[in-house]
Structure formats: structure tokens, C-alpha cells
Length: 331
Image (cartoon, rainbow, N blue to C red):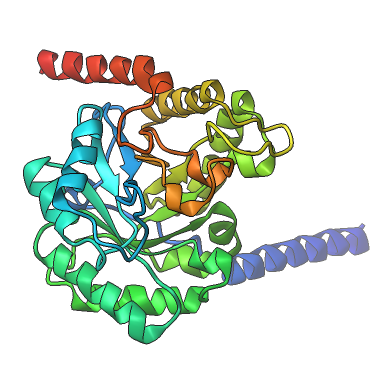
């Protein structure tokens, strides 16, 4: 009996020792981000503001492309088209069309998620980063994005992107402006160091490129968002690009058409309001410079090549406008 009791006691001591050691060496949980009221105000809650967020590139006029001059008239024409249903624009370049920021903020009261385009060339990129800093210091940007899918494309490394983010942070007069980068969901999920080094997660996701049909797109979108939200340690998660094309080549079960483009848009918009998660739809206007009329790359805009809203979006956008008017009328 004494021998049996000793064995039981010894086993218990071993278990206690093992549990103690496990507690001592257990990895601490990542610190959960806590946002101040000032910082929180920079983010958008689609459950409160029903207008949409749009990726905004101004190269829609005939012959226009990155690097070419864009008139203020062309900027205002496109802003006039989207302003009734859009309150936030996300840009890709800070240096190429700086006048957009003053026009968008001061004349149209747009919330602006300002982007700096990174190429991986330190000399070229410094021009972009310095322009982004000037815009932020002038009060013309609410959130800052340093780079767009460059890690995914292999233009630069995650370490390079973080170096650029650190340079922007150090140089800003207002240290409260949130800074991040935009890249694919896969890049974020593969690199925890990237998540830990930014103020918010900004990811791109296109079910079309996975061959997912439009009517199943919102489910795939929600699953991807959920994975990123779980990994974000309490930091805000914004989808910086998503859409379904209305023309171009078929991709597996994904068939571009006007009906499918607005189906996906409507489903994701409704989900974003319910989930109170910001989605920046791609994009404000078709960009003909990206390819031929048969290429899917030229069929993502809510507006056509002339800057006019496409017919398939009219009904849903009118619904959004009415919701916004009704909500504001009750306040």
C-alpha cells in the first residue's frame, strides 16, 4: 500500500511539474490593439456611414495613363459622378496627382486613404513617400498606405515595405495618422511580422481570380476576412480592393458580366454594413490604358470610360443614396 501511494504521489508531482513548466514557457498572447477615440474616428463604420469607399485612379480619359497629366476638370468630373454615393476614396500615388487631394478633401469633403506607390527603387520611392508625408501634414489624408501589392508581385520585400513605413512614421508631424501597406490576403496571413508592424491591415481579395462564381463570392470574401480578423490582434481590418468584372475573359467558374458584377457588389456591400467592416470597392472608373476592350483589366469600374455611372449599378446605388438620406434625416 505504501509503495502504491508513493507511486501515485510521484505521478502527481510529475504532472504538477509539467504543468508548471508549460506555464513558464507558454508563449504570451500578442498584445491586443486599443484605439484611442481620436484614432478610431479615422476609421469608417459602414453601419453608420452608408456611402461606399472607392479606389480612385484618374486615368480614364482617352490616352491617359500613369505619368500623363490629368486636368483638375477631369478630376472634378469623376468626383461629381461618384460623390452622391461615395464618401471615401483610396488613391495609389501621392506624387503623380497631388491636386486630387486638395480637391477631394476641400471641395467634396472626401475621407481620403492616401497611397504611395512603391517600385523597390529607394531613390524613386523617396519622392513618393515625401509627397505622402506632405499631404498628411497638410491635413489632406486620413489613413496612409505605403505600397500596393508590391510584396505579392515581388517588387520589394516585406522588410523594405516596413522600412518605408518607418520612414513615413518618423517624418509625420501628426504621429496619430495610422500607417499601413496594402497587399494580398495571402501575404498578410503568411507574415506575422508585417501584421505586428502596422496600425491596421489592408488587404486585396478578388474571388474572380480564384475562379469563384459571383453568386458564391461573398461567402469566399467573408471567410478570407474572418481569417485576417482573427490574426489582426484587435487592429482594424480593411479590404482595400475587391470587385467582380463586368467584361473580359472567363476564369474557371467566374464569368464576367454586368449582372455578375453588380451581384457581387451588392452582396459584399450588404455584408459590410452588417459586419461593420470597411470595404474599398475596385474601382471608380474603367481604365482603358490597362489593355484592350476584351481584357478583364479594363472592366472593373462603377463608371465607364467617360466617367458616367454604368447602368447595372443604378438601382443599388440609388438604394444606398436613399439609405444615407433617410439615416441623416433621422439624426
